[in-house]
Amino acid sequence: MDIQALKDKLNSKEYDFLRKDSHLGDNILILTTGGSIAYGTNVDTSDIDIRGVTLENKQDIMGLSDFEQFEDKSTDTVIYGLKKFILLCINCNPNVLEILGTKQEHLLVISKEGELLRDNVELFLSKRAIQSFGSYATAQLRRLQNALARDNYPHSEKEQHILNSILSQMEHLQRSYKSFTNKEISLYIDKSDRQDMDTEIFIDVNLKHYPLRDFKNIYSDMNNIVKDYSKLNHRNSKKDELHLNKHAMHLIRLLVTGTEILKGKGVTTYREKERAFFLDIRSGKYSYTEIFEMVDDYENEFKLAAANTALPDKPDYKRIEELMLDIYSTTLP
Image 1 (cartoon, one colour):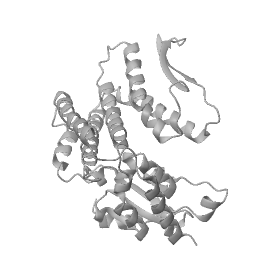
Image 2 (cartoon, one colour):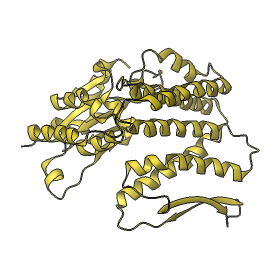
Image 3 (cartoon, rainbow, N blue to C red):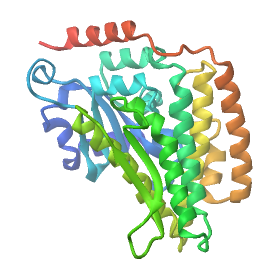
């Protein structure tokens, strides 16, 4: 979609929430494209994803109110509160870092404070990107492998696939939410009492004084892996095949973007150089055998960049806090 046409669309009634919601309107620091449009891998049937950052109000920061993000599912719009956004950036979360790396012409709203965030993206980049981007890519690979699993695989082997996918995300979950140990949340396979299963995944939870919202999000992330496996494992149409190709494309995109970050080249969301290649993957030009061979090569590049990266072990919290205070002090009444 033409960016000007997209800007015009945001002025329609469908997006009235951008102007009417008390947390949005003039509080928006960044509003930009997300998903395939942001990556440059969109096709005619691609959805419009909108992502952004907004400033919490005074009650959220100093009072009893609590605001983390605004979401409108009908338009696939997600706008993070500044504090949550920065906390996710500190953990090198790919979904939020890409907001700071979109093309300048893809910025639908940008304030001077939003520009300040984008200009200081390097403050958030650390060796945590090894886990966050590597973990996301591994998750994509697991999903693709799971979807390609033959129908005659025994259920126990399919269940092990799902467990491996969840376990590969555990370190990411421990970084994204309040930390927990593998003893406090433990997953394993055991005999099932269900009539349709010989074995299934079980979970032991032994948490005390743990934030309910964090636990809800952990469970939701795990549950999404289970649901994704179920969706992708029942391939019976051309639409499903295209869905798998899209996952393969995103797997390689994550490895390419993560490798650049680890090499000190910053965050580049729009993949101009690889755009034609990614679209070829999406359209089914390559077999899955070829894709897995390419993944091996890109994964080796990622590991080499990780082994030689000059990024710090963790971000500079003091400078990030100063950036936050600078933004809050200039915007809050």
